[in-house]
Length: 214
Image (cartoon, rainbow, N blue to C red; front, side, top):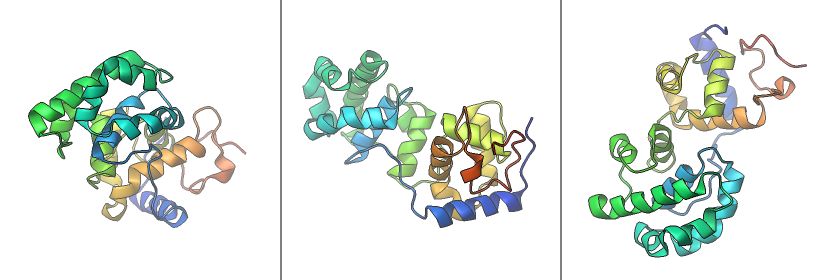
């Protein structure tokens, strides 16, 4: 099992991430808080590229909870049927749109508890919205972040919540806002699951992963 990276090395890792990509951006396309929330909810077990392809036309006609309700579940399905689990996701999006109107005056709430209370919105989705829209230094732990945190030794943990809490403890405050994006992008394009590209890794010399590739 990978050990624990020391604080000095973690700080150096994020210094390099920032130098390489000063303003990392999420890759899900959106036009407001509501479309971001929907896009993130749709992205579960799907690629960002696939979600973006499906939502470009959708968000042109349904960029508010009320417009989404008017479109209806079957209308929504026509737009997102290329995305995995599209039927259950459509039900959730329609249900969360209704809840936003009934309980939050049609606005996306800015608290984790309120966001996580919405249909189809878990802790990870809530954290992404908090971070990307409300600029809260929340740690959204997806499969990429989980892998990088454990593989490098930055924040080892047996489950998503453990890794989230560990990252909150070890990421220096000056890097906290963008930390989850740096880790996601690093996991998606460099520290890949099946064959990590260690030769292109910015933090190869800091990482504790024992099975580094050439």
